[in-house]
Image 1: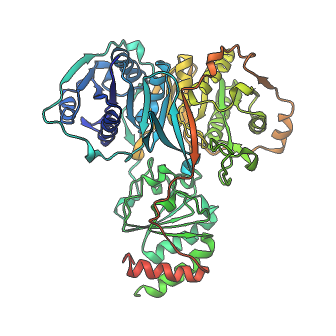
Image 2: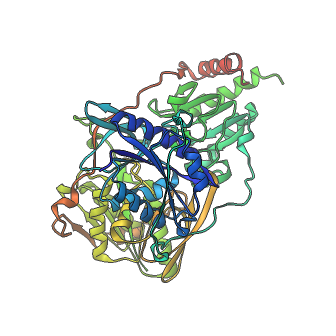
Image 3: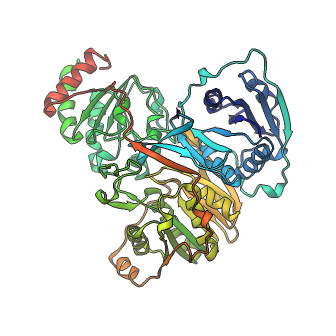
Length: 330
Length: 259
């Protein structure tokens, strides 16, 4: 029974994903806190170069898990292959970043082991002998201290930026790389994955905008978008939106900001009626100055705003447009 | 095609949330409830598949008595029948135990396809559909934005990060978790609401599902919920609307220097 923290290292295009380094940073800290070794596992058809890159981190071991059937990510392939590694090593913790890929297969992997996954964690803390994982509930309006019940292995995923990729401890010497051939048959993989693609070229590139006015549910209806457009015009800003606005078809998908849309970092970001769920925040929190106008003073957007206005955007925005027009040189 | 849709009733999005006495969940007596948003899209997708390919749509929820309202709404929108998994033993389950109870219910019906929303807006697990697939031994795909179904197989469009997608092909039966925005959900018509009154709504409990006691054992539990700690970095502007507008423009011009 190894006292080990095993970190899943996601990769794309032959490189460890940023999420892999963040998960490693989290796994290293967790291992230090519980006095365990930390190893990582990377899966694919040929992961030798990836494994060598990961071996630069301070780790007891890098497991290079390979099979021709792991060439493309599939939930069936990854679940079956990782299950073999976990069965053999019996780690105390298995750590993921809460990416789309981990969301796709980690719950299945944990369930195959008969165990639970505490997902989307912002972090954890020690409380005596207990480890308490903190995760958002109710769209980030509340936090939940969550604990594992029952026997290990315990599966946990941390959300983006819960740990910094540059906080990964580098090892004095490269970690040992162990190759493991996953035992898979073609029948294992039922859901077959096609090549990733993008929809027709994005018409609007919000990533280059110096200023963005973004609207959320608080705008209430498409008939009110005109107000946001006027504010954007006064500021010389592009118009963006949170996901629900694009889902409703009020604005086209290429104006969506957040984890499933564009990631932006303008000098000025004005959030109108956006509550600021984590999926939206990851797409805009790098903005230099953030103005949030929202009725709900508990809205998570106020956690990251530079300037906050708790109030009705329909009352605030019209005088705001007037003031901007007054102050701006013609 | 026989389709089961798993839906959840959650506090309304604009509900003001207050904690219960033990600070382990919100005080449910205070809030109004609605169908979890991604589940509404999952139901709509099921109804469209039925319209294209025939068959039936059964809708299923696990929840207390109040959750029957969610089933009635789904029946009014056009689902053919409903099962309500309600038992004192089903309270406060984690994703694993919820999936286990759902799996027992789904296995009785043996549908060709199970659809559910990609996550619930209250507990935010985003796991139940995936675990359900594992327990049924079926393939799955998550965060789906389009479904093309034939008699024995599916081709689905899965959303990836940052505007990327991929097509996934899989045999039936299967479980899909549906992303919001996949379609335009319909509203219930008056005719639908009236018709719903005569549609079967079956209640199933712990014993009816033939569950073993350990089926509802937990793998994780919430010890406390609370408002997120404030960073305190936000500067709040107060006053009448005009005054706020003046202050804000002043700050954007002179302090942040962005206009």
